[in-house]
Every structure is written in structure tokens, then in C-alpha cells.
Image 1: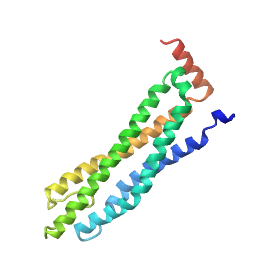
Image 2: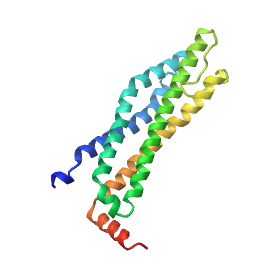
Image 3: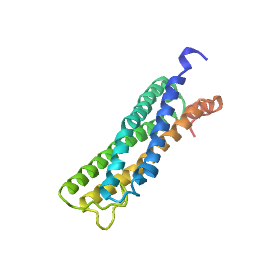
Image 4: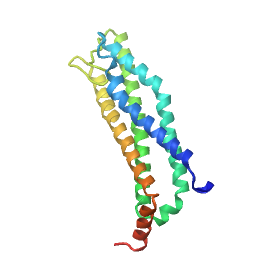
Amino acid sequence: MTRTDNHWVAQAAHDLGSALWLGGSVMGIAGVNKSGSELTQGIDRVRVASSAWGRFAPVQWGGIAATLLAGLRLTQVGGRRLALQRGFGTVGAVKAGLAVAGAGATAYAAYSGSRIGKLAEEAERSGTPVQVKDATLPTQGTPPEIEKWQRRQRVTQFAVPLLAGANIVCGSWLVQSYRAGSTLKGVVGRLLPG
């Protein structure tokens, strides 16, 4: 292996960042959002989840940044494959689109969570009881504006691991395309289409 074809640091940063992003988002849905459900006050249910997501956000964004930046580096060093190997460019473009969409969904989920937290605190200060099942699930007594943002956050929070997971799947395909047989098949497919 020469210095020019050894990009294990970029690949490792990409894969670890993607794993952190996927794992953290799944843990948030399964654990963080539900963590306050045993508390008696709805405002505390929202506060617990808001605090946990707030503490995890820098780590999650670090994973996303590693995925995006290392992905750019891997695309840069795979330039010849983009031109020569059939399917490589298409999967690479889909992967990039998934990463950007996933980052956007993550940002919107975080924004939705901040809106929930702000509205819950405003309701608490005004004496309106904040009734929620957990951070993203309303009850009959949840104020309509909070319920609206809970619904938005729930949808985007489920989209994030789907997009991050699809990004990892595309990355696996791209890595496997470096095998000699896959490379030959892709180049022949490019030169002799159909």
C-alpha cells in the first residue's frame, strides 16, 4: 500500500463519526426522550430531555462534522473512481445527499426541541400546567403549540437515524467497490454499458 492509496484515517474518522451520529440518535429516541416519563411533573419531563440533548449536542455535531469532512476527503481521493467505475459516482452522490439531509434533520430536531423547552417554560411561568407523556409525546392536556412542536420533533428525530443509517450503508457499498472484482466490473460496465 502506497502513501497515495492509504486513507485509513479519513475512513476511520468518517465511520466513527457516522456510528456516533447513528448511535446517539437512536439512544436519544429510545432513552433520552423517555427518561423523564417516570417523573410526576410534565415540565420536569421536558427539562430532563432538554438537558440531556443539550449536553449531547456538541458530541453529536462532532460526529456529523467528522462524517461530512472525512466524506469530502474520501470523495476527493476517489476522484478517478468517480470517472471510471460505474455506480461509484451515483452512490457517492446519494451518500452525500443523505449526509446533508441528515444534518438538516438533526438541526431541525434540535430546533424543535428548543421550541418545546421554551414553550414549556413559558407555560410554567404563566401558571399553565404542562402535561406531556414524555419529551415528544403529548397527552390530552398538552398545550396545542407544544403538541405541534412535539410532533415535528418526533418525525425529524426518527428521520435522523434512518438517514444516518442509509449513509452508512452507502459507505459500505463504496468501500466494497474498492475490491478488485468490483472495480473491474464497474470499469467494464462503464466502458461497455448494457
